[in-house]
Length: 142
Image (cartoon, rainbow, N blue to C red; front, side, top):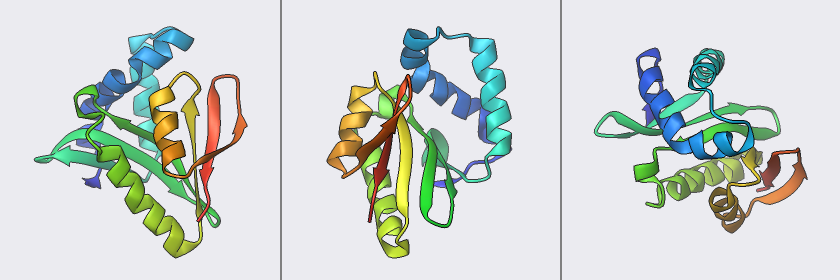
């Protein structure tokens, strides 16, 4: 894992498309131009993004913000070919260690239709603390 840099944005968008197209398309419909423009805009606003790499090529990424009481996961995405290999689990184990050491909770949201991710988060100890029309809001408390 390494800090994501501007030169990664195209590869990260490709990962975003691979990981999220199915869910976004089912909820709102996928508009590739809109998704790309929004992704690039959001990437420039986020200052804590880590690229998850295989031989320095991004295969996933996590973007987060750390506040006084919580670590807010803005997004965590893995390319389809790298899902189900324990990568997200290993990453969350590290985040949980940070959470426990700092006394901060970890918060995230997940699409309601993304059962696979929700089940992973629940298995790791996250609980649903709220919901929106399309998302469950979840939290891990140290």
